[in-house]
Each structure stands twice: as C-alpha cells, then as structure tokens.
Image: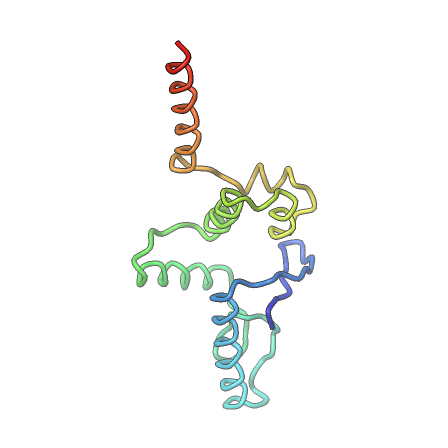
Length: 145
C-alpha cells in the first residue's frame, strides 16, 4: 500500500500516492484497527474509513475537529481550521514547484482555477522571494549607471 483512495466532498474517488510518513501512519492505523476488529468481532463496524472509533464507527465532523485541535495543542502547534491546514499543504506544494494541474488533481478539483483561487494562499513569508527578486533589479540598475 503506497497510495490511498481519497474522497472529495462530492465523493469523487481518486488514487493518491503517499509520502513515507503518511504511509507509515496509515499502516499503523491499519494494524490498530485489525486488533480492534479482532477484539470486538462481529460488533466491529467496518466503515472503510481510516480514522474511526475503536468500534469502527466513523467520527462526525465535530468529533474529528475536536481531536485534531487536541492533537495540535499536544504537539504545540498553532490551532488552525482543518480546511486551512489543507490549503497550507497545497500552498506548500505550489511554492515548491508542483505544477498547477497536479495540485488540482491532488485537491480533487477538475478545474485548476478552483485550486488556485481557493486553496493556494501565499502569506508574507512566501512573498520574501519576490522581494529578493526586486533587490536584484535595483542592483542591476545601480551597476549600469
């Protein structure tokens, strides 16, 4: 398993290759779920989702959000909405040269413009490279004078 089938809000299915740390975490979840399934037997509900209760039941959005916020707190991370975290990941990929059409596919969008408009959100630090580029323009003008 080096990829996972992802589901977008509209329940479109797509295959996603996984980075090594994510793959390792999912394998750990899968092992834990197998143990829980053995303990509960027929009482275990095989929902097909990765992050579930010990009984296999899916979490509500509110439950997932609470768990994510608790994990952010435990890890000493700044608390961000899950959708904003998704946008941060896509912005990171964009800033590191991943082409727009790949970003859109990763996000589950059919239109590149949707991904660029709603998911790629550069912040002030992302603009630092542009400022450095402007510095180069000033240096060239100075050298020609």
